[in-house]
Length: 222
Image (cartoon, rainbow, N blue to C red):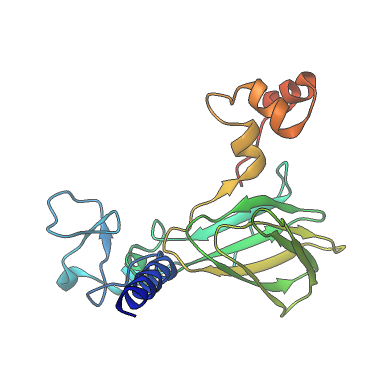
């Protein structure tokens, strides 16, 4: 019995370690990020300003109501609100984005490796979806209208496409102060230096001319 208990305890400990494998919980009220190597505390990749010197502006970001220009190859624009925009987000494990979509605008298939995302449509009609991990690769999709909410689990490939006849706007919150973005096409075909065509030919079962064409394209970073 004791051996079984130890094995079960080890499994539960491992499971809990995975469940909490996200931004660590803060051990202080806040840690306003500052690029000062002379600061005494270094948390989550940032130095902390002396809390006695913090101001309201350290927790403030203006202008999220302003629409961004979507005249680009993908027809969308992302306005991030991460720790790089609000220094007071450091150690809090949250961030946000505004996404503007032109007609037919796309936020291309991508992953946020460090955060789950809750997505809220403010204007327009947006087709969204995500794909589960191997081996099933199940696609979950939904057409959203204003007021609708959809969730993208951490690390899974997902996308948003404006399928309406007008511009669209959405807000999203993410469970990391710096969730990261890996745009699939950019990473695979636009890496620097390029991935060997031999790898991509076999992986995608495409002719070398197609791979060469894809690698020669300008991949826009949203």
